[in-house]
Amino acid sequence: MGIAIYPGSFDPVTLGHLDIIERAAKVFDKLIVCVMHNSNKAPMFSPEERCTQIEVCTAHLNNVSVQMHGGLLAAYAEQQQADTIIKGLRAVSDFEYEFQMALANRKLNPKVETVFLTTSAEFMYLSSSVVKDIAAHGGDISGFVPECIKKDVVNRMNGRTG
Ligand code: COA
Image (cartoon, rainbow, N blue to C red):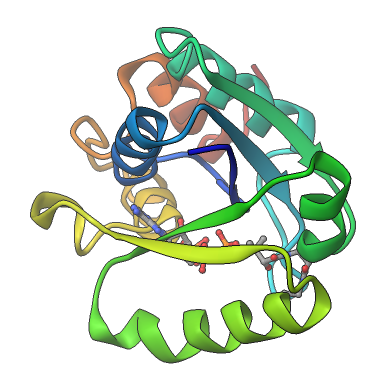
């Protein structure tokens, strides 16, 4: 099925993201998970840190690579010769925003199609902000983020690095 890009801010990557990555990796020959900039957000982790976190928790997937890009998604897709942009849909409330982004990206790069994967039911409520909020209040984020990055998130919320 060619090359697909799964873009996001991934601040941090969650089990919901990992679910989409694992399922997309079965469908496409090559999946590039791309850490990108969302101009509406001030991330907690640097792009490099987010890439490392995703690399660690996708190490078992041979056709998945992780990159970062600070520019437009449509231009990045062209540069990577990707056919498809993958986005996860959690609820109807995601639809309007995702629809707008998909149309804008297609206008900018008519060669790329956006394909939506519906999230698995157990991750419907999940977002990176929910994870940060739970960790900030001392809650247990097991079951929300991959085990290998749990310590990173807890430490950062407690003002520690590494
Ligand atoms: N499981 C769990 N959480 C999920 C999820 C899933 N399957 N899918 C989405 N989410 C969460 C994300 O963690 C995020 O949570 P947050 O708001 O608390 O950070 C939220 O849902 C929204 O996700 P998404 O819509 O994918 O936003 P994003 O910030 O992760 O990614 C970019 C947006 C980076 C892809 C977009 O801003 C972009 O393309 N930027 C590049 C510049 C560009 O081209 N702009 C023009 C676009 S038309």
